[in-house]
Image (cartoon, rainbow, N blue to C red):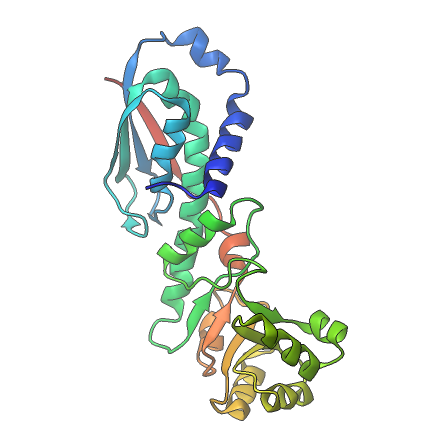
Length: 276
């Protein structure tokens, strides 16, 4: 598999940031020819993500003969389970340890939180969406982690779908103007509505996907009943693990939460080096 250029660049920059002109500790303490192996171990229950990055991380430094996976991305893992093993030049394993762990811990955190959101709405007809509230430069891999965790990816960026929000409506001179101009893009269109008047105007203009922001679950249920299936409905704004079930039970098609990516904590994963 060839990684996306954005991913290759992110890995390269992460390694350069950490190693700089050289790992002075490993160069001082570890013989250049020494071979070793290492194990990535879950130190708490988690949903793993990012293991597929390991070969590309080691490839940047060279000298690693084998990367072996014991878990697929998206798998639930128990405390103490081995996720992957590596074998090769000891200096390379040590140079790459922190960068590899940073990616694995961060992405597994996103996947673990995504799974909790997905589990929270199980049995409803509502899908959980992620958002663009991602770490700069890591959106592609964080959305991958959200997806393997069990939620649905929303648009990747500003380029692959139209989402007309309140500021776009203001700049375009109203809901109808914004809708009519957006159709020329040929892309899927979603529009945010904040009042009953905007809702009716959007439906009259042919809207098929609506975004309702910052409503309570009770208010959202009323709006969904009024829309009555004439358009798909996404709810957003302040949605978290504590209330996502209540929002999902309003009859909405989607709920979106930036917390999946912007508030996921790094999971506890360790790397254990052993002489080959």
